[in-house]
Image 1 (cartoon, rainbow, N blue to C red):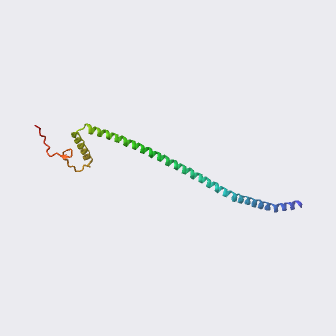
Image 2: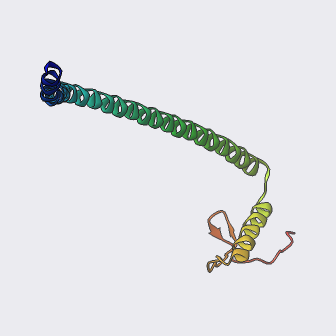
Image 3: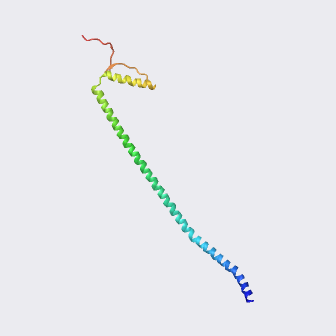
Length: 144
């Protein structure tokens, strides 16, 4: 009879034990979430901040590299302009020092031909001149 009574008591105690363990487990889970979630949120925000900082640093590096590239391009463009100016100065020195008016007329006519080939030839009226004074008599007379 004792065995039956012990079995009855055991059957009554098992649900109480299971309920108490379940309640204890739920309390443990709830308290872990209550303390764990705020810590997780802080950690998550910290990681997001670090990621944002790394992204900003990378963008800054990209902007610096682009600025360096623009500066280098401007330096090269300036150097090219200097070389062009030197070439033009040399050409002008040659033209002014050694070329005569016939060659200058040839250059003018060649420029007109280039413009005519492009179809951009404006209307030009050519008047022969000696300096800035128009030449009225274009016939070549021999001097006695």
